[in-house]
Length: 395
Image (tube, rainbow, N blue to C red; front, top):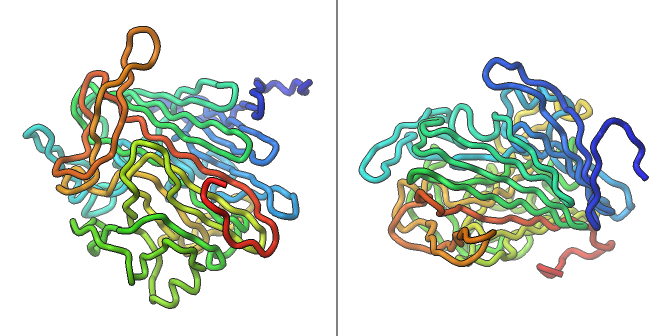
């Protein structure tokens, strides 16, 4: 029986869900109470707040059996309200960069805020990471929803969005769904920063990383894809076999990674990336239905922010694996796109639109009506025995 501490507690078969107030935003500008939700299994516990659907903590066991928090973030709400590099946040309407903040849909040009000059980044000045979401507690997780008004941050169409987190043992799943009243670009992701040695550890150089991708997108000086889809073979971007990050970046004289890797084109969820920290034994594997994954090694972290427990976060103190559509897809041809077809499903007589990712000369757009954007990501978190450096994907 749970102790009554004023929190609401619900249990699924494997997961305990707890909620409490994390803080308050000023009522001016649409503020209110920010809630924090704890999802807890026997191996993993994750904390998520209703501001930006932000993952504020993710604790998993090492081979010593002790839990450590492996994501960067802040102890208090103020850290997430002030400017920060999207720690743990849900990103939208469009993750990553849009060149010059412009795109054209159905013959009409739209101009977005240039919040990362000369481009628009992660949804604009006030993207999905900076707004309150409405929570709904589930037996094994939490579902957040909101309606993005027509014209919000310059994007067309009223967009209804749902983000669902579920925890099952050592598997954290994120499911996104969106429906629009007008044709609009859409690409959602989560921007958690990981360090499997524990947040606050100085660097990620001793992490082993692999990404199941045969190609990547070269970028220009402003980190916009050039339009080329390049093979990783015989380049620094060949991460198909595990590499130790520090040695690999030194070998190729890389300042770090901030690139989209092109994944297998499949509607089914599939393995795409793995990170392993040999000293602690902690391992994470990423599975997704999305066509790309942005591998970012915290190149712009500079130690200026005070994080959890007084930690500082210098350059290369964390990495991100952001499953997504390819960056600037709305302005590129021969780029991964959303193809929608109808199938029976859902409740009653409603229809659930399935999503398939393909390569074709068109754009990443969500059409109006019942068309839905419904990608899903799963992250497996666990620990491997000493002297084991590899885990077969899906094992």
